[in-house]
Image (cartoon, rainbow, N blue to C red; front, side, top):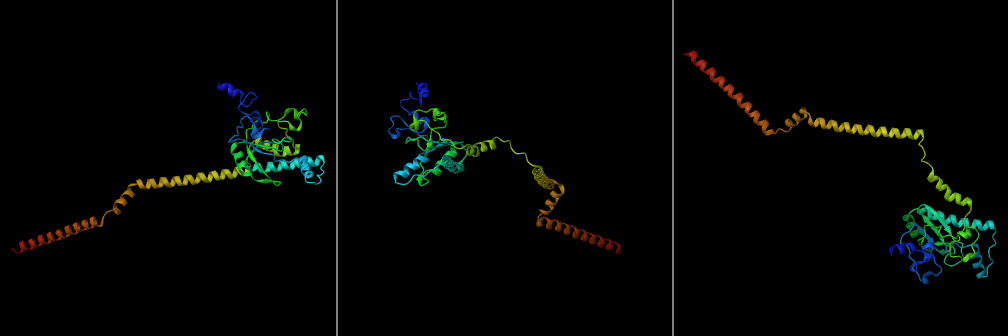
Amino acid sequence: MAEHLASIFGTEKDRVNCPFYFKIGACRHGERCSRLHNKPVFSQTILLKNMYLSVDQIAAAAIAVGAKPPEMSEEDIKYHFDDFYEDVYDELSKYGEIEEMHVCENMSEHLTGNVYIKFKDEDAAQRALQAVNGRYYAGRMVHAEFSPVTDFREARCRPYERQLCDRGDYCNFMHIKRISDDLFNGLFRRRRRQRELPAREPSPEELAQESLQRRRRRDSSEESREQRRRKRRESRSPERHHRRRRSSSSPRRRSSRERRSRHSSSHHRRHSRERNSRKEHDSEH
């Protein structure tokens, strides 16, 4: 039973979990969906909902308020999107390495203008989410959340990429808007190439400096080692031990030796006087 549920999880056969939310991170039914939207607590991918305003949306908003829509050429439209993409990429890359970033140009409410950013790790995505959620971009609040999408091959509309999608702008799979080749090369390929390049070999000057530092550390280590050895030898030498014993002799012991020496000298002098006195007495008789 468990294997069967695992095999159908996130598919059309799964009657409990929403397959569209699982694959795309968005569902056209929203909160009214009859199936569960399992929102992740952590993910490598964050979703900035409805953040990008296309040129068509800008024109429609202008017409709605009675203003004249901006006139833009195909080149202007391309630059408009590239500028938006680069702005978001540069800001979000402050929080970690970005592996993929996609912008939807679908017109359906749950997908239009959605920006998906997949980071290299979940910690970077967490930092970015906390930093941008609730901020304002172009006068509109940014709504950020974690997305379950980590493999965009299942989320993107493949017929659309071959210009064969028959569902139009209201397709429920991602119609990913392409950036210019120059911008793609500048943001992704260059960084990928830098990661793949081998580490730079140090110059002769750097090698000489490193060798000098190693020699200084070795000399300093040998000097300190020799000082420790000298101290140990001095602490073990008999002369030092003798000096320590002499210096540690108490004044009382020295004074006792002096008293004994003085007593012996006085006793010897007294004995000599007595002997001389007896000799004189014997000579008189």
